[in-house]
Structures are given as structure tokens and as C-alpha cells.
Image (cartoon, rainbow, N blue to C red; front, side, top):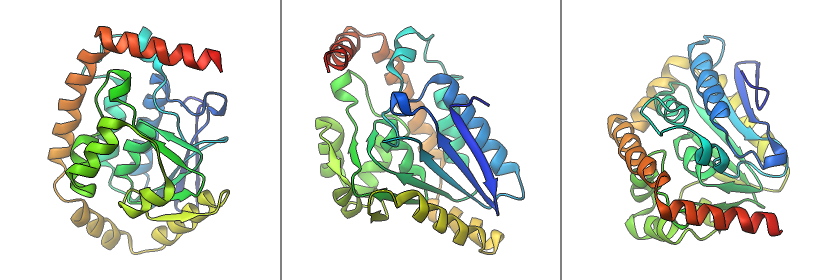
Length: 250
């Protein structure tokens, strides 16, 4: 388990924290592997009844670490990103997210798989996949149209414009918006309430709410095939070089 993912279990709640604040919690391949392992272990632990996902530092998650994608190997079916996403879909226990500051790319799409999401009122969301020469992941091309409708989903995914916590709540991406600094506390309280519920009834109700998951797993693989091809494209390299140059100039 990498120190960039912190795991703490207490009173039936497993708290997973992205711990790379100096990089705004951009997720590396090693972090994806650690997240998959942590989810799998928590799911198998009878003492864990609910999970919380949060990020250390000024923001929740700035998306993928682009350097890993530039210099990493082929985006195959066994890639750690896909292992994490599949485990996220298959997770049998309720997951609560605490989001604050910046949530970009995977920092948005992975919370679509959370049962409850609490966002601080300073959160800014964005999914700039297309502007980076990529396509959405985490089955977001399926889940967003289902939740928001095709027009709103197209606006968020095709234009990639940022949106705030109030809008995220209005379209059903987050459950609750709280004052800055209160999101994690609220999420932990929700998780404690979940952990106190009768576990069999809780998990059965969650399964009913989530419905058939095969379509999500299929969409993850379909997105990954195109995502992997785009990683080798000239437009991705051009877009990412421009992005990294803007970052150096700040």
C-alpha cells in the first residue's frame, strides 16, 4: 500500500484518503493499484460496514497524473486504472465521498459510483477529457446521460466547462453542499449512520438501487479501448503539451 493512499478503519467505517496534496491529489498508476487493493480489502473485512473517500490538502482530486499516461505502458485490460474502476463498480458496501476544492476528470467521474456525496461550497468540478484529446472514463458516458439527461451530459462532457457545487447538487451529482471545511465531517457522520444500519438490509437495498452493473462494466471497457487509442494520438500529445506548458508558465 503506497503512502499516497491513507487507509484508516474505525467503528465500522473505512476512510480512504488521497494523500498527494503537493500535486493536488493527481492519481498515479501506483495510487490506482493501492485504491483497488484498499477497496477489495474493505469489502472483504466483516468489520467494515461503510467507506469514505476524501482528499488531503486544498482539493479533492486534480484528475489523472498525465506524466504517467505519457510515459507509461500500453493501456491494456490489466491496467491499474481499470482494476480500480471495476472494483469501484463491484464494491458491495456503501461509499460516501467528501469533495472540496478542485475535482477534475476522474475526480468527478469516480464519485458517480458513490452512494452519497458531500461537497464543500468551494468545490469546482470539470471534466476536460475532450480538450485533452481523450474520452470520458469510469462509465461516465453512460451514467451522466442517465442521471442528467443527454443534453446536460453533452454540455459537461463535450464543452468541459467547470461547474460549481450548487449546480452539481441541482443535477444530482452530489447530495449535499456544506460550508468549506465541513464536507469530511459530514461524510463521516453519514458513514457512521450507514455503519449502524442492519448490514444485510443495507447492502440488499444498495444492490436494488444500483441495479444491473454489467452495462457499467461493459462501458468502462468500451471507453478504455478508445481512451487507450487516443493516448497514442497526435491530438492527445499536442493537447497535453499545451496543458503542461500552461502549468509551467503559472
